Amino acid sequence: MPFLRRLDPERAHDLTIWALSRGWGPVDQRRDSPVLRCRYWGREFTNPIGVAAGFDKNARAYAALLKMGFGFTEIGTVTPRPQIGNPKPRLFRLTEDNAVINRMGFNNQGMEAAAGRLEHRHGRGVVGVNIGKNKETEDAAEDYEAAATRLAPLADYLVINVSSPNTPGLRALQDADVLARLIRVVRVAAEKVCSLGVPPLLVKLAPDLTSDDKRDIAAMAVEQAVDGLIISNTTIERPATLGDPARGEAGGLSGAPLFAPSTAVLADMYRLTEGKVMLIGVGGVSNGAEAYAKLRAGASLVQLYSAMALKGPGLIRSIKADLAEHLYQDGFDSVAAAIGADHR
Image: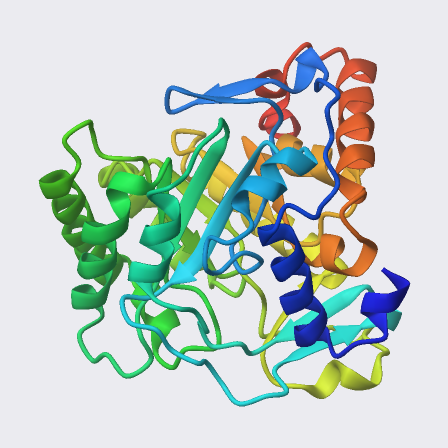
């Protein structure tokens, strides 16, 4: 980690992915505490802590991440065609604030490259696939349909990303009516190609939603029988507490400053959906107490990314141990028992 911190953030990330793709990563051979085991969508999770989309964009490191001790991981965002993303520099560490700003712009090798790697997947573990649109595409539905057609058969769950702040016009797709149509398009595409059953379909949302947005999306998610909502993506807001010189960079802010606002939106969506839609909590998680807070606010699973980039891969072991201790201390015998506890 000291060596990687001396490098440009994007170069450090690329080097990390390169190493993990060759199996050069830590392996946690210890069994997770039984209290952390959970089951959703007919799939077993050894623990509820996963890696958020953005870390492994091209499905190169998912096997190493699972061996590292994560309960699941999510590749992407994957677009139908390869694209280089926004001009560099586009990734910034806010060391003083334990935060990251990125304006990557869905840089990835495209759905064929990701599919080629997922087709050779072996071993156990849950791997989700996060899909998006290419920057120049005018009809977004065409891109989501194409990506779903190619990748749905290879995914344990499929995520429609309409919340990145770094692709022009993307967040406009969070309009409830527009999003409902997009969900239907993706679902039909997946049904055509998935002979063994359509993978669970989730939507990833922004934390910068208005009260009306949240209410409308919650109603739509229940009506459309969406299998889950991921809350949340990065924020375009800049809290006054930020002190790092890079705080003025354009892009999405993640890390510690995102914890409170993303958890508040998570709690809102749990209430608005009356707990009928599964939620994945992501944003600012760097320890077991914060993961536990996401569960109590309404999350069934929890993801992280920025904390691992800032603190290193050993973080997952301490998060799991700390989370198990919090569950035991409060008398919960499972992750499921703690979900939404703050609302009861």
